[in-house]
Image (cartoon, rainbow, N blue to C red; front, side):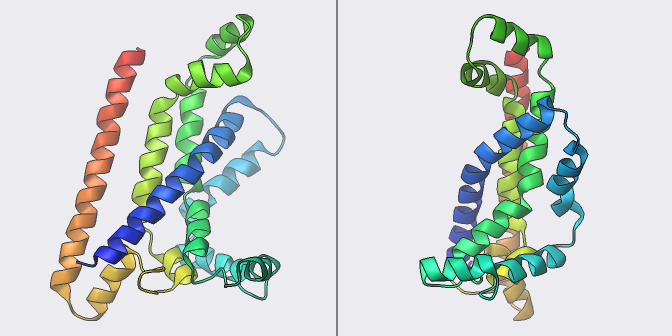
Length: 222
């Protein structure tokens, strides 16, 4: 068992969820409540990582993060190290890849809130921030929980983009999925099977907890 790779994957998943939560709430809420001319285009761009091959997305991110690009060059000048093949670059790539898993469930959660509820809260003099914290988030919590778990689980299993952007640097960018691939390439099937079973178990447990908690929350809100 490659515990270093597992710990790096768990850390990457945790950072991804924490950073995507406010993004998902803001963008998901905006898409749920607003109608604007480019809404269809924005929704398509958000969902794009779901259908775009990981190697294609990884190639474009590798190009954007490279030292010869404006973003990559600026990062290297400020941080003193390249963005590609680093944990920071891996984290940014993970945030982009998981946008649909974070935003779309939250959008559906906010869309399920009746407009009359929000209007009644506004008529009672509640500020938008209080409406969000006291009314909308508790009602949309199943969507927020689903988004968090899906983002975390998908981060643990992501392979193509991780390999393209992060490479395979032990302790820095070698995630559990990359470690499994390396063991298979080295014909170490026993180690690959052990890590695969652990990853499968973590995924099943997290998704099961999502369904259980969503049902309980739904009953309480109902």
